[in-house]
Length: 95
Image (cartoon, rainbow, N blue to C red):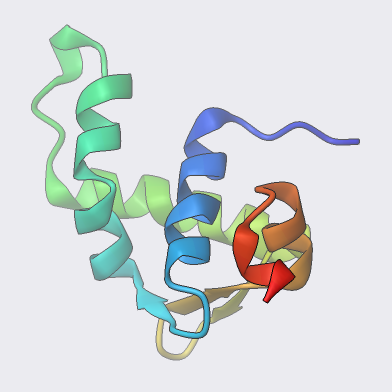
């Protein structure tokens, strides 16, 4: 089984918590602000919004390619797939 970086797992967890809804790139970036503070080295702590969004978008493209999410390229909205829910062992799939 493929392992994903922690950042990708955090994105999947955010989307799993909002199962049945979609999140825009901007919404996900703002939700991941605490993750950026945790994983960004001190000398790079001044991460501007465009860099954050670019990092999130790169992760979303990879997760979409691997089938963990559905990324609508027209609206930048993402939703988690069943495969993504299974990966993060979310309780939503039990209901």
